[in-house]
Image (cartoon, rainbow, N blue to C red; front, top):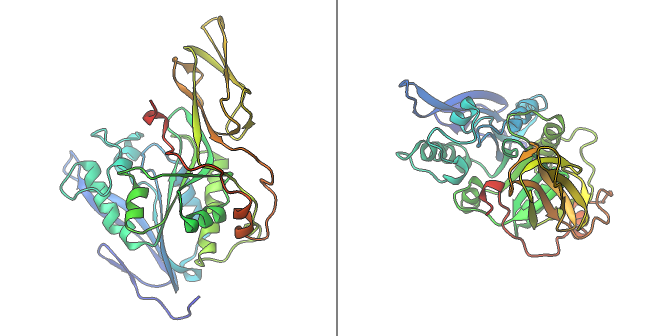
Length: 356
């Protein structure tokens, strides 16, 4: 690390001194009341020079696990002991966060609205503000998500395929599983990639619920990444490197009939092709049909609502051919990478509401 003091960090109308932290609000648009709707940020500007990183949550307004992760990160971070700058955005979709909704009031998905436009829709204005004030000021981003309502996601880091640096950062994060997939147009990750700002995306937990395991994975993972790039010193117990589960293909498994589902597997379970996942029967349990796994892999998401229509997506399975060595210690990230490379070319990873 360099020893010279950095310059003040300038954002919006503030100049934040080295070794200090400030909360600021940036006006985005005007509400129906005529009052400003503002993006809330907390900026921690370290006492030493270093990278600029943002951690964002609730780009889908009902995905609040990331908000809790950011709150708990602050228990571990002191600007006077940091190198570089950290921008925390606990509720990017300010409209959806207030109304407990994934979307904005105009039903647009903020994570399909980048780069946005200053005089466009609510989503376009918000995307434009976040781009100008946050993304363009940073050299790395970590975006925190959960599954949609009535769904649960095993904590997983998703990264753009073909980037050794992102793979290294994902390994440093140390989630239960790392998934590589091509980027989707209009998403924050795609925009950041175009701006040459690498991004990690954490999926963990479910909408409108706090989940202790998901929060703990998120907090420890972000701290590991910040330590890996030299912004902080690691606490004891966070430095160990283990071989991760890695995948770049996934499959959705859907209800074969409408009725009531009795799930016998859950997120995190290892399954083999043909293993039973659930039984779906009628209102009286009649005409029950088994739901089986079409592939070998790890369940990375499941529906939590047992009342289902025919065709509802009940399980999301990451295809993994072998789990040999997973969880074992490794001498370095490079060693762990060498024994965990996925065997297939990556395919686009879609949310359930985007799958035909």
